Amino acid sequence: MNNKVHSAYRIVLIILFLGFLFNSESYSAVLLDRVVAVVNKEVITWSELYKTMEYESAEQVKQMSDAERAKIFKANEAEFLDRLIDMRLQIQEANNLGITVSAEEVAEAVGNIKKKYSLTDKSFEESLRKEGMTFDEYKRKLSDQMLISHFVNKQIRQKVVVSGEDVNKYIEASGESAIAEESFRIRQIFMKSPKDEQGRSLVEEKAAMIMERLRAGEDFSSLAKEYSEDASAKLGGDLGSVKKDQMAKELIEVLSSMKAGDVSRPFWTGTGLHIIKLEDKVSARTPDEMKETVRMRLMEGQFSEKYKSWLKALHEKARIEIRL
Image (cartoon, rainbow, N blue to C red; front, top):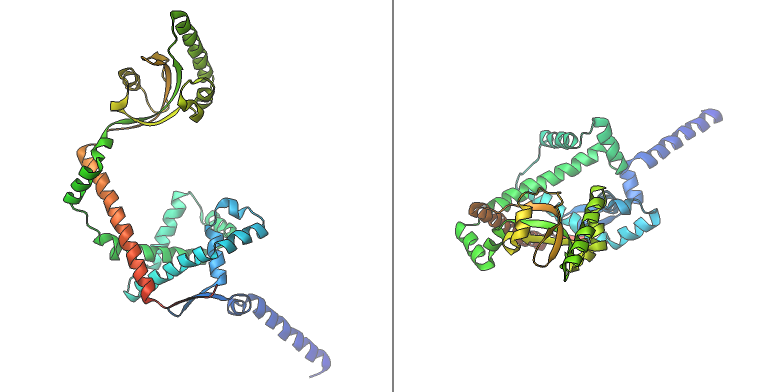
């Protein structure tokens, strides 16, 4: 082999080696990555941990500089690693019990997500690229989440039972029936009752001026801060949620014909003049609706306790090594 051919051959080998060096995932993993935890012989790598933090971080974190984001991630390494360990333990347990998620189920879930957000294949994959994730990586992540959900539902959630007696005891002990009444979320502009008729006329004139400004599109809460004469003024007139049986009859009469978003005409009660805005109305629940609400609350509470206890048991029987 002459020198020119030999040199060319060496160059080709170098190029092939460099291509392997910079494109081989396995080599890059060895060169650039490190193991941060071992969970029953399965490893979690530094890159996996940081990719998870990058994907799940809030939008304001994503918009930070690289240095600021790295500082935030470093401070939250341990918390995110704990979550990854929890996921790995649950996936391992699901696999041990033969619970699986098919490719067809994942494809259907992806299709539902694209339909929900009106995404084409191209726009969906573009959104993933912006998150630093390939479509295959996303499908693996989604498959893992679906597997855990199936597993937890089968092993824990479906075994939670709340009896009618449990519901009745809770209602009796907590006074839950007291919140079954119809209630209203209200803002108000309130002006105190004056001492004489002249003062009453001045208050009504001020109320008329406020109504004009409201009709012109000014913000109710801003006007409440400016003109209201009760403690709610600093909150933009927000009275929160008020039960019907706690209201003056004049207020109930006005609210009876209002819809969410409506502003009332000015009206007098024994304490002064009111202009109210109905933010929302919560209808009274029937006894059966109230019991179902309580049943779901008790089921979620039991599920949460059982899930935490079961996850703790997984940790106790597992071999976990942290290398952060």
